Amino acid sequence: MKNKYSHIIWDWNGTLFNDVNWCIEVMNKMLVKREIPPISNIQDYHAAFCFPIIEYYSNVGFDFSIEPFEDLAKEFIDTYHVNKSGNSKLYINAETVLAEAQESGITQIILSASKADNLLSQLSEFDITHYFDETLGLSDIYAQSKADIGVNYIVKSNVKNALVIGDTIHDYEVATQLSADCLLISSGHQSKEKLLSCGVPVLDDISGVLKVLEL
Image (tube, rainbow, N blue to C red):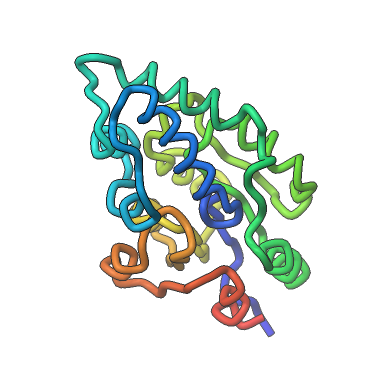
């Protein structure tokens, strides 16, 4: 049977890689250091988190007239990578889904708002690089839109039938710009309620992806 999609374009953080609690912990270290109230629970985190990331920093209480966003972003990334991925793991069943999709002949890439070298470092820790034909990240740490990188890949590779899988409204926006279908997973950085506003299928966890792919 012909695959439903020729390509899957995966988001990384919060989709395949479960770093949500670690992101909250790192951000809270920064907030407490500045005597700003920390993020108290996952609901508050989901309420604050958004793209562009500079708006998220503003939502949790940073004042850019005191410290520029660029300095804060660097501190976050430096702290986040202190223990590399020791505080985070792949989602349960993530590698099973990757393996099944690869076995079926679907081309898989990662398109992430992470800095490209940081992304490759994390992938190598889990020994999953071989599942992906391309790993596409940004050239800096400021987590702006990844859409342009994705569009360039789609055009260069002449992709006609792609599915974007992510965990944020931004992933839906990227899929729209790529003229790709979108599937969202609510176990990551944004709530199911927010994701449902996009009008695309929303899964509770990654294990449901194989059913959507009809594998």
